Image (tube, rainbow, N blue to C red):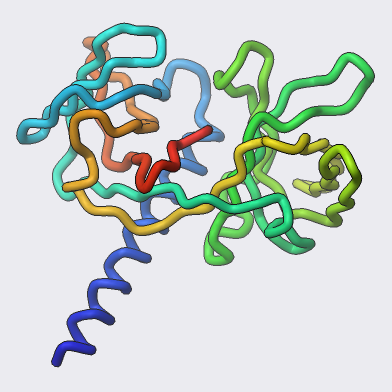
Length: 210
């Protein structure tokens, strides 16, 4: 009986992770004006109202849809990235050519190919988000370089030492509490209101870097 309860809890957690990432990868491909990415610290959560102090220092209210899901981020490393992995990498163009990673998200195998492509991103000005399959990963004394493939295109991205590398882990609504760092890809309504069905929360000292 106890084993069944634990198994059910783990299965529910994994399902939540997959649903959240499914929504996020779809948001990566969304056109301008369709999604608002909210990054910040939870001020309060009451019912379906999530209050966030954004990274820009502005108060933001997000209405959480019924049965909303949450995932956490867990620390990973450059060494965890291997050929065949499906990753989401935010990066900036380098003055000497190529791209340099700002963060790396290693996605679950079940989501390989979802949201595939390279899109404008707003982590920093001129940044992009590339969801792609790792073709190779070469380590050097100054970090690593990965070659990724998407829709017949190839892109090389350097990953300097110290770049945040994370994967996803189960979380519960109780983890979304004042002081927690969140990343929310919210839909913007015609009246300017924001709503979301999924979010990612920081946990155990690891915060969403995307």
